Image 1 (spheres, rainbow, N blue to C red):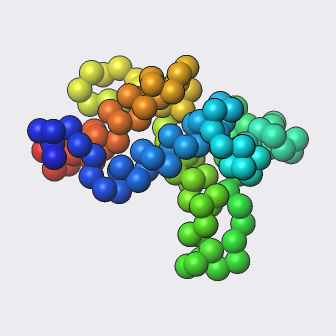
Image 2 (image 1 turned 45 degrees about the horizontal axis):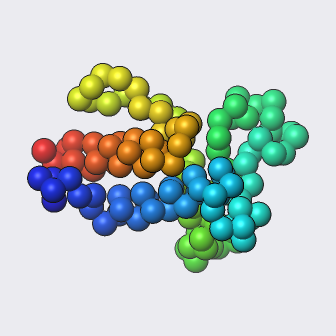
Length: 124
């Protein structure tokens, strides 16, 4: 899989979910999902926090820790919030800005590069 530059299954799922969120946040995703995702900066009390400058999403509260974390909105919010705004790559020594990419194609490229590096850096 490394030679083919394929992502492993968990990273592929993360890639798909993060791409859906990016599309929704930039008004090119499905409208029924766009209306459900809520940025942390949309809440007045959170704008003044340090995290208010980030592009994080609010994770909906759930009652059960086991089955409550499985709904789509909880999962995509957690996936998006785990994405680095910038990470230091081991190969190029240049930061990769994942969340703040200017276009969908750039976002996909940076996301795949980052996921590939975290997936195979220990195994290679």
